[in-house]
Length: 113
Length: 115
Image (cartoon, rainbow over all chains, first blue to last red):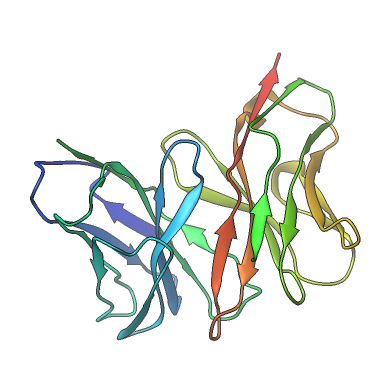
């Protein structure tokens, strides 16, 4: 089965701790994306990567970091500097080129207390 | 600024009636437009896209969308709604940056189909 996996589905952390969210795809896509979803605010882009070993900040990158060492993996670290980290996080991937749709993973719900 | 607007937070329709979920956009250059659907606590699923050509685009699950360049709109439609269509719908536009660029999403519209 081809697709995007995100783990874990639910994640709980204490304030002040860094946490890393996993995203893996076996679709052979070059581009990968991380979004944050909050109620009533749609999806906001955190980081994206169009090729291995390269990534760009999205609209709300502060307090987050990423790496893209392998084509199939794009982990997101939520650092203690992120002021309001509790949210639903979605990973996506797509073929290179502007006409291709993005495929989304099932999401990780992060709760920080 | 490049943007997408979904003017309705919620749309309510009766099962069997036609449905429309509205989307307007503002981009420079040719627009590449997408519709996605999200069920509770799930990721987004791609429904359809407009790249070029015929203004009426057909997609998954019987959905279609009409591209209107003069009104800068890309409304999602379905001739006969099902209760199972109840979900959150997102319109998105591609903003070019490098080879692929990124998607800008609207705020989302909740579709409620009542039996």
